[in-house]
Image (cartoon, rainbow, N blue to C red; front, side, top):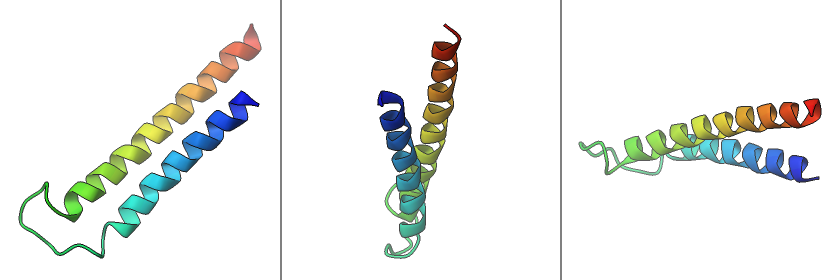
Length: 69
């Protein structure tokens, strides 16, 4: 049951990152600086997706190790 909950949480994180990337494109005006507009939101969304995928891979490796023991 814990494994299913962890996988569900990781999937929610990945979906949240994708939503941040998609939603961060339109509502903000285009400023010139990198850290004060949609560029920062897009970077944070991409980082969240990458970290979520990394957590998903690590979780899969831990599950395989537990099965082998």
